[in-house]
Image (cartoon, rainbow, N blue to C red; front, top):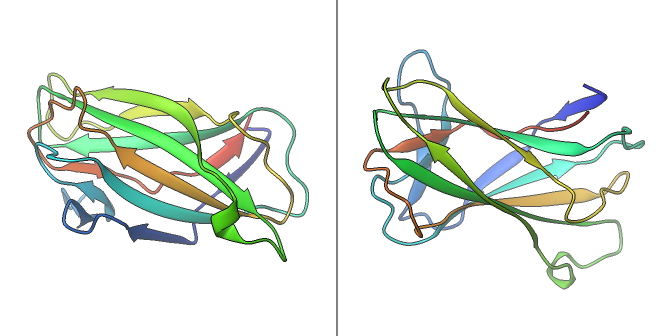
Length: 156
C-alpha cells in the first residue's frame, strides 16, 4: 500500500429501519448491517479525516462482506464528498463511484471482498470525507442479512 489505511471515525445508520449494526458470527466483528431481501435503498454514512499529506497513488476502499447465504447478490454503491474548514458540508455534492455487485456462492459466512477505486473526485489534505455506502435494491437478490466491515480508504 502506498498509504493508509484510514479508518472511519464514525458510521451512522441513515435509513435506520433497513440498516443496523450486526454481528453475524462470533468470528466476525460488529459490522454495518443491511436487512435481508432489501426492500428499498438503504444508507450507512461513514466519516473520515484525511491526513495532512495525501498519499500518492490511486485511492481505493475495500468492502468486506459476509452473509449466511450460499446464493444471492448484494449491490453496494460508494458515494462520497469532502469539505474543509469554513466550508458548509451541505454545499458539497456526493459523487458516485458506481455499483459493486457482491456475489455469494457455495459457502455461508465466507468473507467476500470488492475493491472500489475512488477517483470520482480528488481527496484534499485535512478535509473531512463523508462516504455513503448505499445498498441499492435494483438486482439485489440476497435473501439474508448482509454484514459489511467499516470500509477503510487506502492508496496504492
